[in-house]
Amino acid sequence: MSEVTTVPGVVLIADDNPEARRMLDVRVKREGHRTIMVENGQEALDVLSRELVDVILLDIEMPVLNGYAVLAAVRGDPLLAHIPVLIISGGGDQDDVIRCIEMGAVDYLPKPFNQAILRARISSCIAQKRQRDQERSALPPSPPNPPSESITVSIPGGSTWQIPSERSAGPAYRPVPRGTVPAQLGRITLGRLLGTGGMGEVYLGHHELLDLQVAVKLMRPELTAMPNARERLLREARLAARLAHRHIVRLLEVGETENGVHLAFEYISGGTLAEMLNRQPSRQLPIATAIRITTQVAAALAAANALGIIHRDIKPANLLLTPEGEVRVGDFGLAKQELAKAVADSLSTMDGIVVGTPLYMAPEQLLLGSRLDVRTDLYALGGVLYEMLVGQTPFGNALPAAPTLVGGMGVGHDIFHHITHTTPVPPSRFRPDVPEWLDALCLKLLAKSPDDRFASPETLLTALVMATPVSSEATRP
Image (cartoon, rainbow, N blue to C red; front, side, top):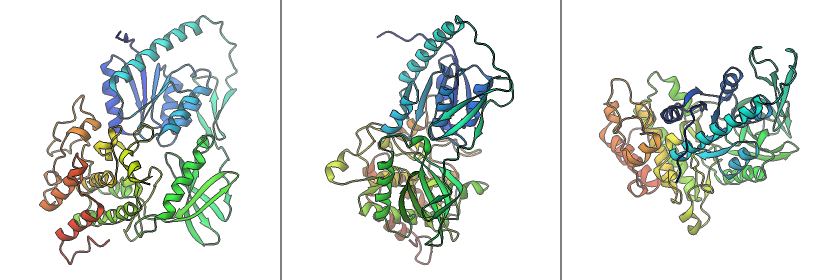
């Protein structure tokens, strides 16, 4: 096998996950390249307006502007269209891969990626770009555009970007409101944008007939052309419709207009657990609160498991809180239903693409062909419990003046290595008031083998009740 000759270049890394950026930075620099790191799509476009870049490593799920918008803007700008874009994302499926390739990405590498493949793709892309640069330099120069003129780039779904013809004239990319989101969807009046996810945008709305505030999920405009987009959103609706439980966000309505399918969920006004953690100076919660939240999520998982439904993306951002502090599990967009044992035995990833959020992924989610079941969700819940107790995820950076994680976070030991090989430090090492039984329970949830975890949410609930004083409200489901 011939080795790929490394041609040093400039690599732009756009990813909102600090650990993923650090990991990519280390591995790309190891090959002799210079890196520029940004945490959202807007920053990526700003860098491209003033820096010469050879390759873009692009995550899909980012704030401000996601990877689809960046990819469309790059491919629509004559001055940037020749730059190779490699998509590196952990939350995609086959449709996302196809979509990115159709939009002009060179390749789609799912996390955790193979270092040898990444190295080869970057080297190949840089070499090809250098060749194209030489070919472009041999062409006669185009007449310059007046500084006041701009190039309009259309982004799938109706969004546009105004790109000044002169690179030195201020910020290069200015968003133009797309105007494609309607003010009214049947009996629902739409308000402000609440957030965006892998497939949808969520808006605050008011349902006229129910006289309720609702959270309305719409398919992201740039994804509406995907062949399976409608069916995927309807699949989420069908699963959500079967889930009637106190600690699961209720689906109130499914509708379809000329703007596509929309789902109306109950609006939970207390924010997310992620936001609650970020408001704490140490990102730690009182032990009783952490136990109560864990108990309520376990109860929700038990209800889903009774229907054969696996969430696959339990994390603080998907755990919503009422003003009274009760938990509602939301976003079953990555959920799967075990229709039969034969399906369950082979259920792991979506056509070979790893799905979920890396910091809360169980080891089996990283292994193609592994079976996923409710114990995968219990592992993620263990990660959430650990974060509530310690203030960081099990394999995040070590806390100041605290024991370092077993195996350290040195070069070559990324988050995926720790998930599959490293035993987490007991929470009590960071927080001495964590009782011994809770230490053991948390580490049991985080066991590498599903067989070493709790067998079901019900057994977890029993363990919580048995270990907690009867008078305590912590284990009230």
